Length: 203
Image 1 (spheres, rainbow, N blue to C red):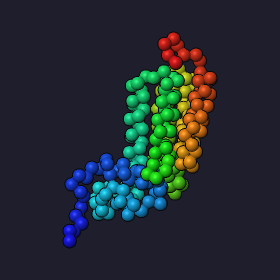
Image 2 (cartoon, helix red, strand yellow):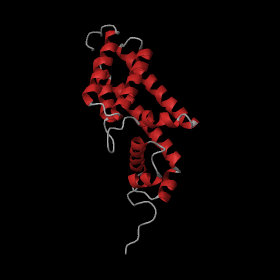
Image 3 (cartoon, rainbow, N blue to C red):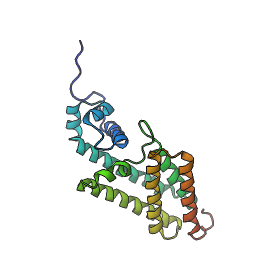
Image 4 (cartoon, one colour):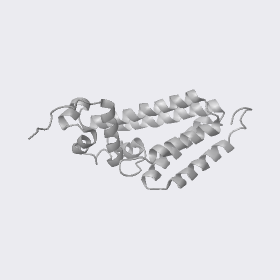
C-alpha cells in the first residue's frame, strides 16, 4: 500500500496555492471555508498550509492582499493604455463583470465585497484592509478619470466604484449578464453626459 506523501508536493507553487485558496474563500467566505476545504482546493495537507501561509486567518489576509495588488496591476495597465473616456469606462465595466461572473460553482462576485464586508465588523485588520482596498479603487479611478477629462473625477470615481460593488452583489445573487451590462451602460451614460465634450481625437 502506498503511503500519502508528507509535506508539500514537488510542484508546490505559492501563487497557485494562494489563487486556489482565494477562490475557495470567494465561494464560501471566511467562516464558511474550513481547513479541509483549503487543503482540498490547494492540494496541500494541513501542515503544509500552516508552513506556507500560517493559520486560516493569515491565509485569508494573504488572499485579500493578493486581490489588492492584482487590481493595482490592472490599474497600472489602464494607466499605460491611455484609453479615451468611453473605451476606458466600457473596459472597466466589461472586465469587472467578466470577473464577477466567474466562480468555482456559480458567479461569486468580488472576494473583498462578498466576504470581507462580513468579517470587517469584528476584525479590525480585515476592516482596515477593506477600507484600503476601497480607497485604492477610488483614488486610481479618479486619476484615470482626470486624465481623460471626465468631470468631477473624484466624485464620479466614487460613484463608479459603488456601482461596481453593487454589480458584484448582483452577480452573486444570480442576476443575468444582460442586466449587469445594462446597469453598467446606464452608469457610463450618466458619467459621460455630465462631462464636457472630449477634445478632438479622443472619445
